[in-house]
Length: 306
Image 1 (cartoon, helix red, strand yellow):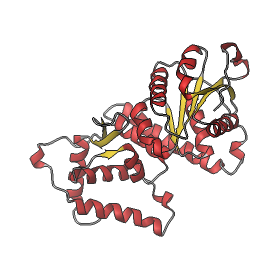
Image 2: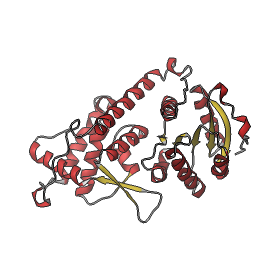
Image 3: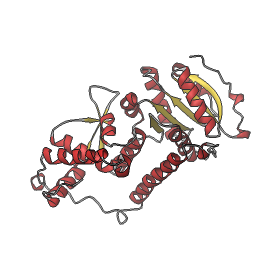
Image 4: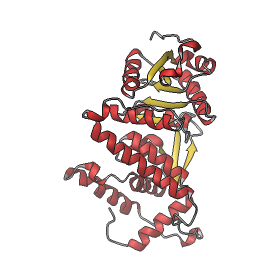
């Protein structure tokens, strides 16, 4: 891919803050440009993955970075992700990383629970929304151009509702213990009821069967679906990578990743690095969440909970 080198003096912010793009191919670059222009922003320059880290370090006036990945770029990609995650944490700029579903594990292994806006296999509306979300915290006033009037308008409104719901959850969590009922107090392991793997599998299967008769998004409940999947894995002594958990959530991958971050911040899920693969992370139930789920099933009893 041919990169367009951008000198620092090219980034004039008098007409809105521009975005630097790093892309893994010409096609990826073209798609990123379309998204940024649809969001009403300017492209300040384009970079190759292999040289992006050094160029971004030199570009002291950069306000936002968009990283578009349509393939695994190996070590240069990993190094760039590490650098972007650190810079965003330091408040140097806002960032969006867009990738394919096959890249979920290496992307989440590097970005973890960082403030980088990560989107996977995203629609154009999701991409523009991610740009707005990422840059809002950096005080950049991007407009959503004409996208609100096209066929993606309904999806964009849905994304807004989704983000608001997650934000409300996080707000309740941060407002103190009185605002959110805590997980049931931990008890000795011997007092935790057993739950059979068959019970959990039956419930998961019943939830998936609903899609045969109704639109699946009518019943979207990613938090509960992920809890069930991790409980099933715990009972079977299996480890669940982020990519598998996103599939279990039964919602678009970008939505699942947002909820995963929320569940980790709430203390319901725990991320564990794969000791044999630095580009993969496992997710498991926190001990208190596991005990709470098991007590819940014991109290519900025989009736199926879907």
